[in-house]
Image (cartoon, rainbow, N blue to C red; front, side, top):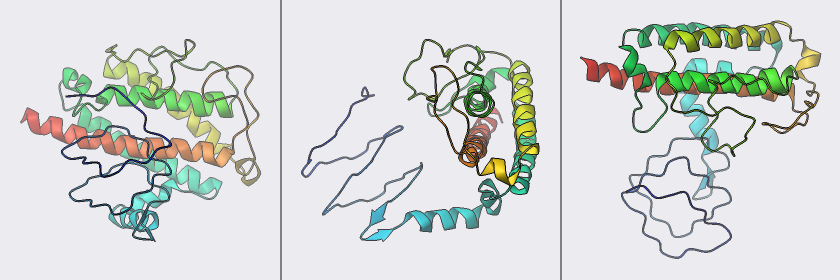
Length: 247
């Protein structure tokens, strides 16, 4: 049974039993647990400031993930050359992922695994990510989105932003749009200087998402690197499942 979204804020909950439950896209912030028993819990997501028995486990998790995937550290560059290296690396990794996707029938690329985005929807979301953070925030286009852009599920509805989750464009149609976004991001990175990387963006003129204010350029560019890295990982995971079904 699927429950509708709900909020639990500013309260104390005593002795709850939470068992055999799947929690999708939860937000836990400033949660304090005492006398907890936690067993067979699998958490996947962004972790900041998680202390277990007085130990901040966030740095331990990050170190282990870096050990398992040494290329992951490339997604945290500190200078223009590092951003160019990271972007080139992502291009190579995505080329392999797209080649894998092309071994599946087209209809499989619209299939969702465990309720996650399909492969085509993942690419559509990356169109949106590049449009809002690069075209809007960095380049100043107040309304850069394309009708095939796919915002993240938790984004508040905005009548100005396209949001057609169910449309089924072909892979080639989406890849053509993506090639344009990849080129735009590459041009921004190729023009990076240490001074610009350390600066803040000029607020865009017009409402929309993200809100029209200034942002650190380095944080904006790193956001795209992280989006590209993790969504490729998720895509690879789901493609492997689909390929297993197709054998």
